[in-house]
Amino acid sequence: MGKLFLSAISVVCLSVASIGACPVESTQTSVKVEAAQKKYWISSTGKTHNSSCRYYNNCKGYWSDTGSGDNCKICGGTSK
Image (cartoon, rainbow, N blue to C red; front, side, top):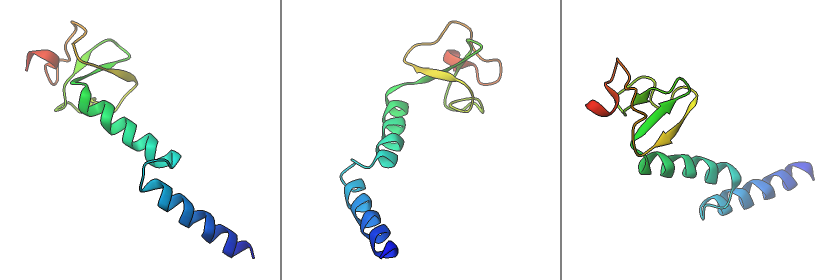
């Protein structure tokens, strides 16, 4: 009985995920959409990173359309 119940839940979640309503799927989708809309990653240190940088979305920080004014020395931030 337990396996049947778990299988039913899995099918429901998979079918719901296909329309974007499963919590795991919607979280991943929202991150991808936000990344596509924003050009720069501003790290917690205040440096601006572009998509070619190893720190882009790989450290604590937030998305931004504009730079912070303090460009990363590795990728150049907004200057490249």
